[in-house]
Length: 323
Image 1 (cartoon, rainbow, N blue to C red):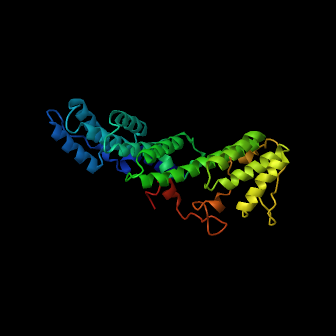
Image 2 (cartoon, rainbow, N blue to C red):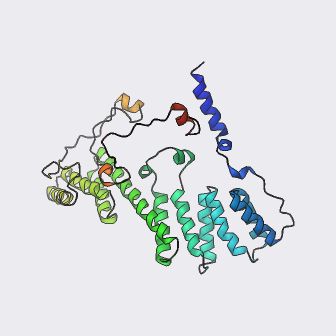
Image 3 (cartoon, rainbow, N blue to C red):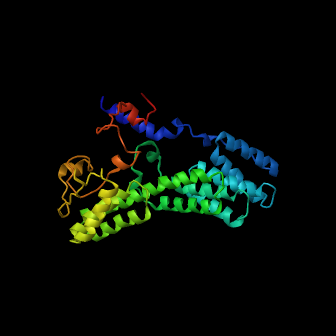
């Protein structure tokens, strides 16, 4: 029965995790019957400062319903975006931001609505486990990242001097890196399926549309390899020369700077060990490019071997709550 203990512990934590993590929305809000507009607003400010996001959402909606043209109506609509964003209701926050922008395009704080909309798109699609466990964001659906970039760009175009402009620029850089890497993942998949033209198009798209991102070297490598496999040697050599001239440390190049072309291997078959381990072991040798450990500071290490994680099994199971 000893082996059942970790399983039982993890099950209990999964069921009671929300209360252990201390959700602040469990507190019931005050009775708002007979509240004046000022009473509503004061209660809402207490909810927001105390982190009672869902209670704040309820009171903000009640305030707007009862006093749609009151002194606090516009401010309540703006704070509703924030409360929904903080409560994790990202789609609702985006809808509330769009509504505010449509109704109050000249409001002095409309840039804040754009910013919160961008943040909501930025975090949209991130589930509970993705926030706690390390995941590769570049392999997620890029739709929310594209929407976030579009919103932040609109913020910068309309309000270049906004106090939120600096953070928006930094997030755009981060999101462009994600989108560019996503294209390289797609190109690697096309190599596996022998769709070399599609792979070349993905690589070219990165080079043309995501300049200054760490994925550009791999974009050039994808182009060189794909054109080679399509027997378009001149185009392959042009891409390889650009890669060697600008990124001589790319792993696809030998010491003399020559591109190491690979021959087509067909669609690779995964072994039973690879399938049973979800791709962790006995990986088939495929044509793929991923030089993040060289060109992207986030993935660069001081040595070749990753650092060993010293966390115990109980720390992993409880997401760091124990041990």
